[in-house]
Image (tube, rainbow, N blue to C red):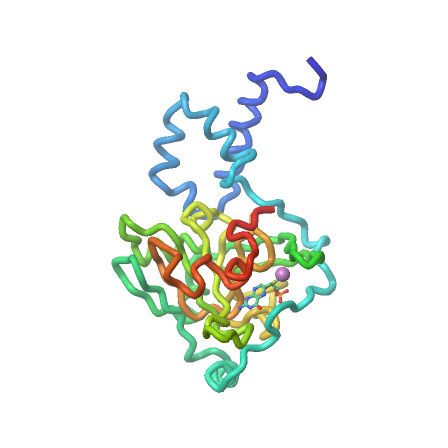
Length: 260
Ligand SMILES: Nc1nc2c(c(=O)[nH]1)N[C@H]1C(S)=C(S)[C@@H](COP(=O)(O)O)O[C@H]1N2
Ligand SMILES: [Mo]
């Protein structure tokens, strides 16, 4: 056996330690509160499964950095400012009248103000944003976990995807489907690092970076990080939205699951 190959027993121990620190590190995240995770913890037979999911699977955390690693410049990409009077009026009033609508397959439709989102438990994370165009930047994001909002809204049993509708029309598409949007499944939606960010590097989001609110879904590429959020729709299918592939760039040939 090569010295780099950990014996199985040791791997399991590492897995358990990683899991413990994840629970301790999470600030009231949905993962540690979810009944699934508690029953899974109670069951020793599931340890191998849990180790795999957390060390290499979709529930593992994206790398987080220290504040010294924050990039001095964070490029603005895609839309720099949504067109139209509606968005201009929101900027003018410092987003006092902006509400994040949450609707679809939920029990309680919501209309959340920025103050509501800031009053919820906050998560801060310093992560690297990777754009498919070949640039990266490290930034410090803050906002409530998406899980918190979804728990308030109370998903119906048939809920499968979360769709993010944005204020900007990125393209004047001839079929009228130029509006920017994105979507994720419930595994990513309840991931502890999936947050609705209102701040970048300790300041409110600028218009360039997606004011007043954008998605951070840290295990995926830049185009999934929807800016200018206006409405979150919970649905069981993506094929009836826009061109049916679950996002503005996925509708144009990019992967819907843009994992990194
Ligand atoms: N609403 C909206 N969200 C968007 C985009 C966009 O054009 N419109 N561009 C995406 C792409 S390709 C990237 S790399 C990031 C850029 O975010 P930034 O401008 O904060 O760097 O936002 C993503 N989210
Ligand atoms: Mo991007």
